[in-house]
Image (cartoon, rainbow, N blue to C red):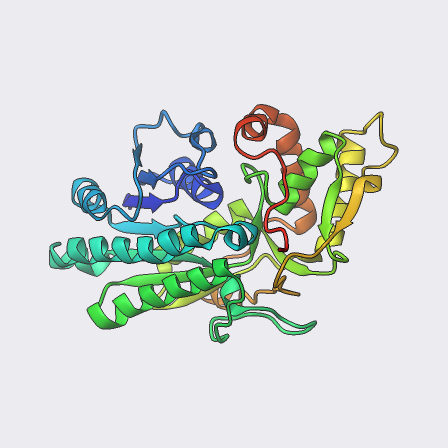
Length: 353
């Protein structure tokens, strides 16, 4: 059945993947709300921009009057809340934006959603969903063993993860206090097409193509669980369709790799797909740099609940997803070159004081 989706942060990396999936693989209507800060990019929505089921509103989720206007104008049946400041290094350099968007913005959005939901007919109230998309970083850091799950205690360790933890708690509070029908998901590290070039994988790809140094924090031993973004988009729509109201679902790709292993894998693909005349091996460009403050050692996510209850499984292994990602950046230089030239030139963020 066709539904009306309001997607906040829909011009961002994960948000745009969700929108492309909703428009391309379903018959839903989608309204994107995005402030278009540095990481918001309408070019990421170009594949669906001409579709009559897609619309866009440039707005800040912290603008209460505008959010009320969007809710009562578009009348969504599902809200997928992805709008967030989302880079740990940037949160070290400037935490205020993370507090403003991730905490206060989420509060404003919840208040607009609650007023809209309360004013809706009973059948619409029953079917409405507010889906908050969050991160595994709210759980803190793991040692060599174990994995995060839905009952893991919160232990955020960066301004970014603390702001996301706060927003998670707000969403749960609006459910338990006011009855707003919510769903929450906490995902592992995403990667794939349209990823902003400051992140590890796209930064490594682009620097490698340009023959620049490939920075690796510390010894490169920090471990992340990598999830292909299109698998994540399918997981999020599965949660909206069949998830239990008030519940949390952890989404992981079963793709644990150390940062050094990730960079080496990218280098091997670049050697194969875009060999450099100036460099014998892209791996020769790897440069170890001072670690960032408070760098969590390891993340891993146990997706047993979403797999068992909702039947979701990642379609991509880390190897197949990484190959698709490198191929996409090779084929879409114009997308990332504009960002490289105007927004982010590859400089280090989150430098220790």
